[in-house]
Image 1 (cartoon, rainbow, N blue to C red):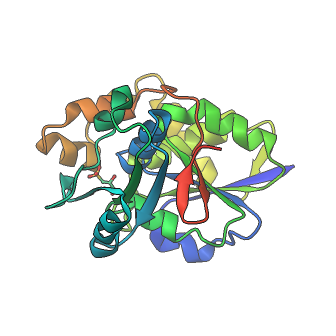
Image 2: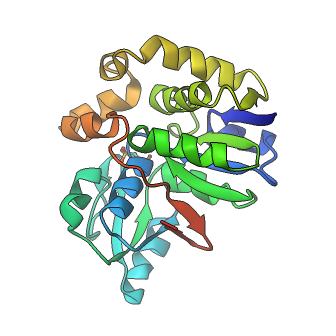
Length: 234
Ligand code: 3SL
């Protein structure tokens, strides 16, 4: 049987052997949801960066520059980190360079993986189908918040474990913890997360619409993959 593991924070990733595994990067609020939405709406490719200056330099190569710090658009950038900006194919055919506090960092920490894919509640079923079709063990890598565990990424990991239960066994206790969180939350995900730390952070920025969007299951059926330096749809 294939195995599934869950890394609840980037600060724990050194404990996981990513060799020959498919890594699912998740930052439900909001980096992975933004990437999924952008690519589903025709953005050609997304290059992730952990540092602002390296990301900004991509403008010289014709990339649009997107990103946030503290949830707000970075000064001088074209776009922030809202999935809603990419709806209606507004940036169809564009290349995007992106830097966020946690999400793009988790991608950079996954270079040893066999494959890196991007997951969120908005493409949950598509990610589950993709993993079932692969002959590889899986690590769900939660971007979390500055090294601390968060509820929404844990919940996504648990939903995936739940969907894959017939074909994957838990490698340690983290998948079991995540699944328990998901089972408690599944009938009212938005209500369950209403007091979570990042939902509160984003509410202070007045972006409730982003929260609702990112927490709505299966808006898209695409599964973005990292190929070389860029994330794209194959
Ligand atoms: O940390 C991240 O990668 C971001 O998704 C955080 S925020 O939702 O844009 O504040």
